[in-house]
Image 1 (tube, rainbow, N blue to C red):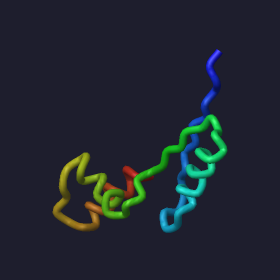
Image 2 (cartoon, one colour; image 1 turned 30 degrees about the vertical axis):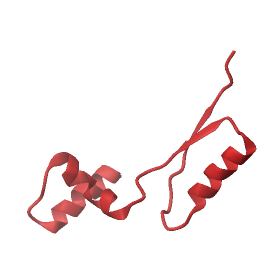
Image 3 (cartoon, rainbow, N blue to C red; image 1 turned 90 degrees about the horizontal axis):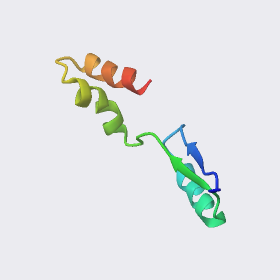
Length: 71
């Protein structure tokens, strides 16, 4: 029987290195876990809506598309 692996999604604030601390700890301890995280580059996160659904003529709708997709 294979070992169970845990998938951990590291959501939350993006201004510190807490994700790296956790993933480094997982590796250092050899835990059976893999971590994933959201996009943490503000510009990429803000622009995801128009990148997927197309451009918007007004900045407010550009921002709204990104916010709705991120939500």
